[in-house]
Length: 78
Image (tube, rainbow, N blue to C red; front, side, top):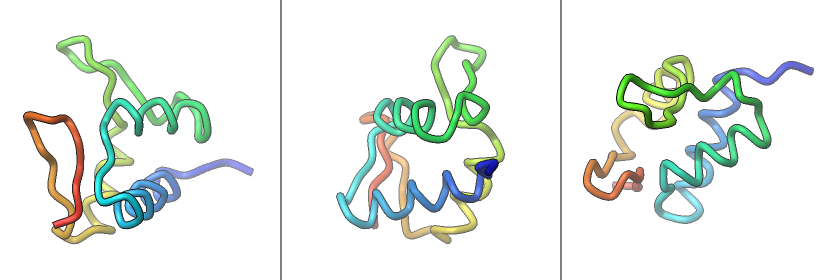
């Protein structure tokens, strides 16, 4: 069964609700291992990032209730 970006985004929201936050490095490691490398890419600065499809689904799901901490590289429940 093929995993979708929506399922990855749902996992992220559940993690953040449960833990209160989710570090980008932890998310990328988990997503690569559990969901597949197709949801991760290396951006123009050389950092691993989640795919645009995952980010789009994630934003729709949380509807502004989760914020990105630019300095700490993590998402947190607001």
